[in-house]
Length: 153
Image (cartoon, rainbow, N blue to C red; front, side, top):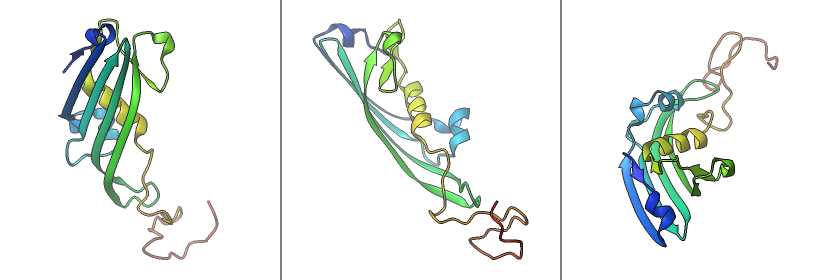
């Protein structure tokens, strides 16, 4: 899906809303982050006034992954919400803007993927005080105490 935003930058007033479910399971980059049992729901609300174009984004998703310390399964929900300015000048691009290509076409699926990649945590923990795996024998320290040296690694 592509949206032509030429009118958003030239009209006195512009409004467009887009809601869809993102096919995250088909994207290799998103699959590297986690698995998504249901398709993430994405909402974009684009509104322009006298050339200033803003994009409000809401993304809700469920994920399944593994604990970064003990490798136990972890699942949960993640919510992304932000408002960013849409621009056409690459020299003004920063983390609070969405750069629109010269052809004035906006690709909501690509933007949603980019926002998920940027906002998604690097790793998850099964609990805040997870003890992780023993570096010597590999046992899960949350479930059992091993006989290995208790040296810090």
